[in-house]
Image (cartoon, rainbow, N blue to C red; front, top):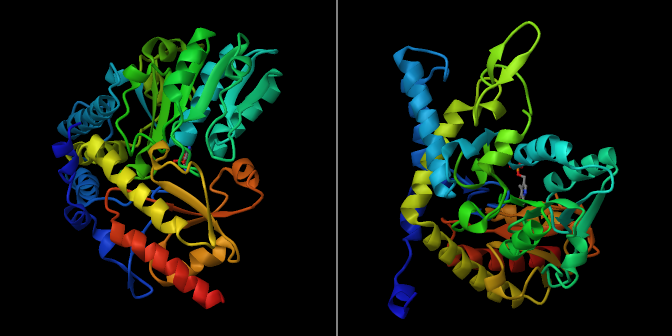
Length: 416
Ligand code: PMP
């Protein structure tokens, strides 16, 4: 990228903000400063309208009817799948499976692929910075199969320690399942390098992309990952819908996760034959409206451009790290170098409990997260039980980061 391109503003945050009705809300009489985007993002009018329009104009069940509404609903549902496939550069739309969320996608792989391929004496590799959804399914599976669950640990700097990686990912490793971007530390992990290592030993690579797909360009073919999971609600889409991407041959060989309507080709009183991909994994009436609205969210993000979104968040993160580091009462965890992280900053105050800090900021209209962020072992490794977390998205501005920093100082005054 040349210098001139660097100077071009990526998009106008004020224009983006105007698309989000909720940003007009007052919280405790103050303008809302929404900095809890790693938990869930707000929805633009475009997505809300897609939902309303679907229910007002198209609502019908999919894949089952010959009538006009059913055909239109099916087309819109499948078009949304194609949009998501394009968004992550999946080679074929049928490699995109709709699930409820990242957690369900991870569980699906653990309950099907891993259930069939992990045996006694094998190992499963995850990292020390996983969300509970990418720890607990593997703990359960490892116990059931008498397999070993191994961790790639992180240093205090929030960066994975890879010096002994060839001993961790070894010839008995069947699957490496790891987060692309940590929802606590913000660390962007070297998934390409680790995917190469996993493939060297014949293991498959699963990426928890809940905190990356919404924020940066992600290309599953370039990354060569075997599975990738994410949630629509963290990328402007509705709750209750998520995605599992998988390589075609892997998905095709896997057993279904759930049984019921739509996932079968033929049923006799004795037996059943499974439907083709992706339907084999979509038993029952799917979440049609929310899938279509996810397609609308993808359109909105594509319109801004994922490179631009990533650049905007990097800029906000660098600014926030600089401003927040100037407050002597705060300890920020995660990489110091802003280029090694996404738009997530977790921190502790030296005298105010995170919950009190969060409550104080809420009085000023500022929404942050407090707690263990569903990564209890990681947060505890910093000798605390809870941390505060600010996380950014397309509609956040430097002005809002100033509001956060001022709000922390103001809350300090309250507790002094
Ligand atoms: N993994 C990561 C890294 C996350 O940040 C989250 C959500 N906080 C999840 C998994 C789980 O996502 P969901 O609750 O949508 O299933």
